[in-house]
Image (tube, rainbow, N blue to C red):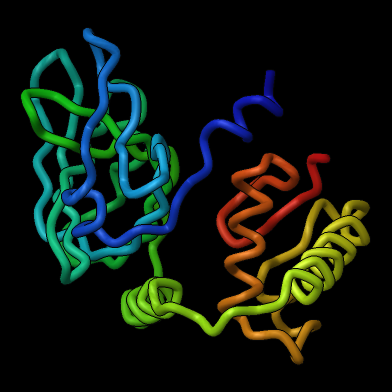
Length: 207
């Protein structure tokens, strides 16, 4: 069951404008996923600034944090015990969010699983990373792609006894291969359910 969960719910790296441009799909009663191009998105990985925060005072605990990454704004809605878990997250912080997309009254929002404070420079790093991935690359021979995929898988498998490997380490070890291509191939491996992310930026072999 855990393996199936990893296969279904990849945390896609997106900018907020991409989320807002997506098409919410429901099953007739509740939100199922966000359709964006050929992707069906349930979980997201977003970096932004907390620009506003509201916390309820009644019996029903909840808080709403507004996230802005320069391309748009989206609400993070936190409920019950998670309110205490994320109480130290405040306006003005730059954060990494891993969470589930949800919809209520035509509003798409994120229910966060992880909120981690980052240096503000990572906002620009993420913007450039996503822009590079959107640029059309020169065609690469199928044989080359297979060779790249084999090298990446070899690096991931060899790190299993350490509990996985950081993507940055894969990029550093494969200096003759473009980081954009490496990220693209890792994303494909995630989508195929061959590898998974035990935490953001780190991958393990799933098989």
